[in-house]
Image (tube, rainbow over all chains, first blue to last red; front, side, top):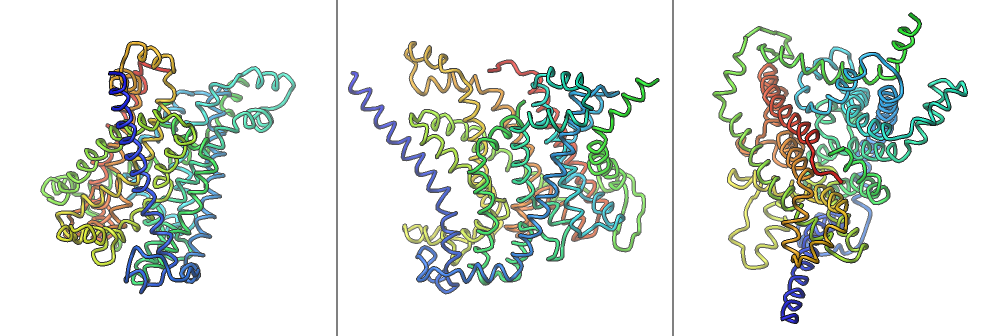
Length: 278
Length: 295
């Protein structure tokens, strides 16, 4: 009886591992195929999509780079860095104000800022286009910086605020006794204590900005202001017959965020988990 | 008096956030209602008040309804794979003894969620490509050549092909979150179950599932909300074609406004999206507030 049970247990384990590893192959194979195809010539790709390239040359990467990917990458980095800094600071200020400063209508202010979480960006699309055209910022770097910041403030404030609520208050009060102003207390004491959640929010914001498509597509059209996700579709429509060049561009777009995920996995998971149910 | 001034000055902390969210998130929302009552050509600038005409046109627009249906299909399939499938998968992963394997599996499954939907969408565009695409090659190689087809090029398969890509891209994300929820279940609970002689399946049904019920509810809500905001992958893979068969509300809004220059109509679609997503968000709020089991 015992041996039969363990026999069944072994069968179950084998099936489970076959399933888990099979799924890993389903996930990894398309990605590997993309990377390998980025090294092939067009003729090789059309000849046999599964074969390895005859010689591993970076030609396609060079071509992709020179056909706009360098511009898209620059814009992506610029928009990502500026909007991350803006979002995280504005949100940390707001979180500090909501948890540490006695402000009028505290609950209303919190509800207003966090309520933004409930609104889908698509809904605001038409009026936003009109607004940015009127401001003369349509098709500019500023449009993306402003939109990415404004639309991510609710989520980022939510995470930082939840963290600040759990921090001990005694330290802040002690600082105030010492005569340090609120501004000093924020920079010297509260913000350093929030380092783990700040790291989470920074990483999540980078992931968001780097991959965002809706706003990037609607608000930019020239190659000087396009980020990678939109740039890749331009590359595709302009050089769509040279598939390996497009693959090279896709790999360039994907590698930084995959690396970022592996380096900051702990913080990203924490931010995502807190963000969904705290 | 000084106290009042001091309190009011405190508002400076929240002012930047309030202004940015107010001007760029809330104001457009209000304007959208107004715009949805206009017949509006953005290039010539002509505007005419038409009341609820745009909403009436929605009801008679077959593409609006098929878009809505596609969003709904997206939601149903995603609930199956990215909520219940992911939950079972997370439980399987967490039953693996080696911590290193658990961590590796979770990370590998998550990779597609880290890369953008644009990259994932383009990748699958090539995988589905009728002549060079690996999918058709594979089918021919295993003798199922008659199943090889233009996956994204025909109305009967295009939407399913996009949804399949989206499951591939998104299941690792929810699996990761479920794994976190399962890790938070104290070991003693399982120990007690083991003493009672409960097998692995019973353990999942009677212990794991009830204890991650709140996370399951939240994931379901987030998944449905995401299903109604689909845009990126459809634009990249089919742009709504062939013959509007893969339009979803987001892409139909875009096409109506920015391609067909019918901004009032686009704003009316946006209102529908607003009502749906707000309703879902309020449900989420309700679930978080009324949580019962907390670890």
